[in-house]
Length: 125
Length: 125
Image 1 (tube, rainbow over the protein chains, first blue to last red):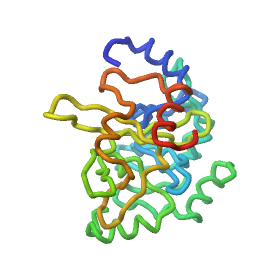
Image 2: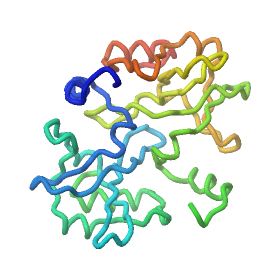
Image 3: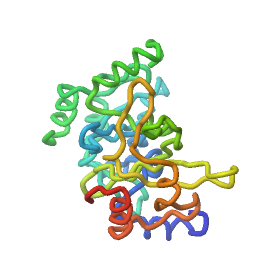
């Protein structure tokens, strides 16, 4: 908000029940060691029930070799007000081995794929 | 997708269980008479349960006098594949009288405000 400084905005936001998709997109995701894993690029919403299922992490890849998208189950993300980003219990190796795709090769996000993602992160779909 | 034409993309998307927040943002919203009401600017997500509660309609206003945001309950929107946009049973007068705010004056989206919006559109919160 134009009339708040950043700190107030974050504190006030945390008292909200809701968050804007605009504020989620671009938010940094860290692991528990404080390593930066990437940023949230967009998220995937169930059409019928309107539930956010995946936050899609944009991950630059090694040696700048092209951006990859890693869908993460929404429930594995925790917002950390001090860091100003999401924290997930995930090391980089595990993220690199996770289901992912290139920008122009978006998968179908059908039930089988969604279950695959949730299964990888140990979350019930 | 780069390798599909628009028609195929829309048809294939409609078989998906999910939609990307990127594709929702900017989508045109029509009423049942085919009038263009505005476009979806972003949406509001419940932090605890990850449910999309409101699609926030960007509405140019009369005589170009400033953009206003009108939160609509997600459930009142229906995607129309032929129009390539959402359809809502709402005339312009009713939209103009609905809860809305200016870009720099985002409300708290607390329970009272959310219930006010859902109540206006006759949807249980």
